[in-house]
Image (cartoon, rainbow over all chains, first blue to last red; front, top):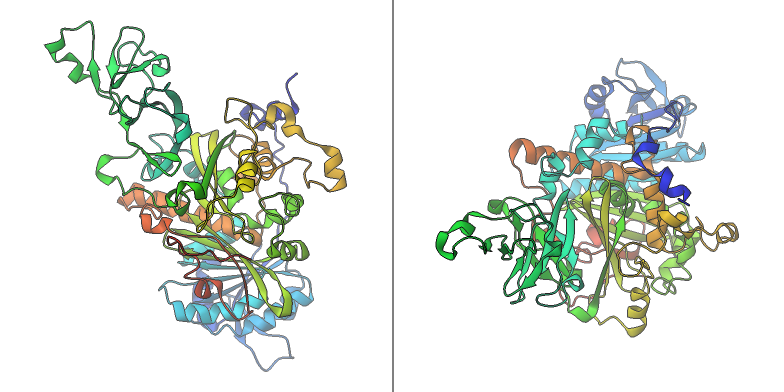
Length: 163
Length: 428
């Protein structure tokens, strides 16, 4: 008698896999940690996404402690605490050499709300010293930290997680 | 999630496929040396990268790997007579040397020169360590021999095996850089397998099931670091190197041998899962060799006389639901190798990655796919040699280490991640 596994693993049987969607849209909050990332983020944001929201930290002071002022590519401002409410995952973005101090506020706020965090550091120039500074700022606050070589790689990473 | 066209680009490895051409830039494991144990031994059928080949060892100990079929009437040379410096087709006596050159056509006058016009496609086959390696690409871009440490240490320090796996190479390889599955699928083995148990690092693995990940690029591929909490606020790091296109090393545990893998496409729906264990500074002990030969650790038991795992899809991988229920094994399947292959084969011959729901802890897999795609297209469009071809990229090691929280593994462990003869490895 042929085992269940033999039959189930054929290419022919693969055709009978249910094709209905197996997930609902995820709400990804993509956060540029420095105002200098705004243009790059706006460029990535202009592609088609499955509900991802792109924001850039523009102010670390002047708001309630443990909160930040964010700006969308269209200029609209919001608060981190409000944006986190509906976020399933927070993807922090920084460039190699960025101080990325906002990572601590974002990370604490996300952890406090049981939100998944990830970090992407763009290292276009192989700047080891600058990279280490940025990684150190992010490391304690992200479950997964990636160093990528270009903006295309950042876009692909977001696409891979259905952002 | 991966777009279908990228999935096809990365999973198709035949001679005309872009990824196939990239695989043909590398030296790859073709056979275990034990498969051709002596001069004039029986030839062995080999299928690699969707090409059917025959391997043999001639009367002078030279290895050959060439088109399986005689140029005359297409007979398989597996039936051939391996004798007096060549492999002779038993149908009409045509004979070939290890370069695929026909050296005798008995029906033609010896001085007619006919046989000089007959040559089978052949590839170099060289023994390095206990593996026979081949290079199937253009002669002009043949790189220097591979220098992976497991293959260059003295023979008493290393052990290699291979097993047949019935799925595309990529989904098997992705398991090797997916560090997050270890805490679940393989959790039962840490305290019982003779090649794992007793290491201090195991306790960190068991105590902290939610590791943090850090993925950084190196010249030949990636380092995937998984960090867990250790004592006094420190971090226990397990660092997996991935060298393009399909080599990984598992981070070590205590003084146990270090293991790792290659996944080499046989065709697009099956691959060879190569596994090795070696110790950089000492011979493997009798106890370790006994365990390795018994299929412990990352190796497996076979159907006698084959490289097909004893637990395979025809017997539902000998799944033991009671062991699953009692937690002796997490999935009910015994042994790390088969725990992996059972699940990877269950995905189907080539998994449909458009249906995946990857999460951030899959970033090692995500980055590896990106690197592969970029390298394949750079080779195809601009002729750029891909990472991992240069033997300098092979001289890497996995590491397990406890570090203060402010230290980055890629800086502190730079030396530890580089292989060098006789240098002790860094392991907890």
